[in-house]
Length: 507
Ligand SMILES: Nc1ncnc2c1ncn2[C@@H]1O[C@H](COP(=O)(O)OP(=O)(O)OP(=O)(O)O)[C@@H](O)[C@H]1O
Ligand SMILES: [Mg+2]
Image (cartoon, rainbow, N blue to C red; front, side, top):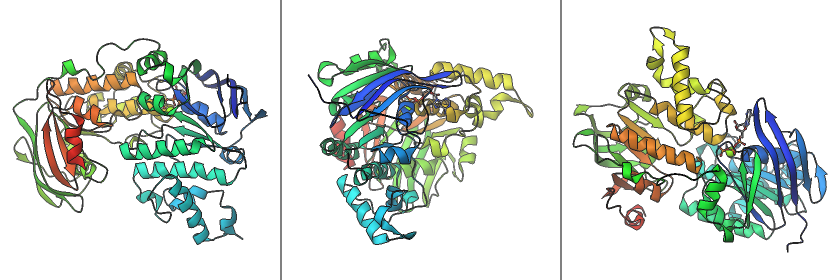
């Protein structure tokens, strides 16, 4: 029996946003030195719960106790002083500050004397935090120059820095910290969580159930804003967690392998000698109609830049791209969209959506033709199209007219995906980690949609969250290393390569 008093106890927390019951009776506890998992479908209320714990939103009812004392959190600063900090799903760093400034923002302590920064002191202390997570990021780097994954690491360092300020052991809330990290970075974070455990408690939100089972001591399952189960990893498996999350069994194979149709003979896109200054060097490949071509490579291998340059978002220095035999010069995204290209970026918040616009508008945004009759926007058509996709992807929203920014992270992503899948004139879809942050059900739905698109002749360039996903979904896998193609591996349904075969060419 565990008799240790909890550091954090939440009882019957409730929060409504207009008609949405985001939290509908959440209760949970975190004990000292525990890593507690929090799982649930997109929109289940995970982020809302964590935000309530750091005072970013005020619950309507229920109680929060820290070390046995009832608290009302009024904001991040107060929560930080009480020893509870959060790493956000949507990042909170300020782009034009340095890494060190971001880590100690509002908590500079001895590093500010009379309003003047003592840079060396600040950087030294930031370095100490970064060292803790084994990060090689420089404290003096400008945050906006960092990759998404690196910024995530800075967020983690920032929360760890609360240790410096409280005498009590902190509670660290991590909202999907691994969804943007690659394998090595994830391992570093896990090692860090293990280390943290001796001096803090951790709440870990993730859609990767294998990770949750691996790092957590206990797991709470949230459904429709309610805690519906508490599990111990040794006693449950992924399938059980999945069932508890969605309240039903998932039918069929996750990756819908049986629905993979072979690619066609015809070449849609032919790339030769493609060179992007400093990042891609003489890349050659053909992409067939209806083919899903996976692109593997570690961060910095040039795979993102390759895709961006084909989409016209990055200047090409040399090389030739042909679309159905005709020379294509991807000068701007606008121009290639007109040729039937679509792109789902990994950083959907930054470039994939307009948060203030409605779900319906975001879905139909690049397809004005489909909803316009002459200059008149057909609201009715827009609405029908949006409703159809909200249903297909199970986007959890009060309706098509709700602002996209008010949806949960995963549901925003579904809307951005729907946007491109809606188009009738789509020829080539570039997907940069399309299932990142999606729950298991939504992931399966996206896999099915990719299969459907490919079967209808649309070609797909896919960068995926895991090698397993990449191999399962692709017809072939192109491997990039140091800006060059280091391999092209066939991956037909009946003879999928082993991950190692691809990994070997990546590093
Ligand atoms: N500021 C807000 N205004 C209106 N509705 C909101 C707001 N914040 C959250 N919601 C709604 O509350 C519900 C829970 O959202 P929350 O972000 O907590 O989900 P989540 O479990 O974190 O999902 P995900 O896995 O997609 O991140 C969703 O239906 C969401 O649309
Ligand atoms: Mg969330």
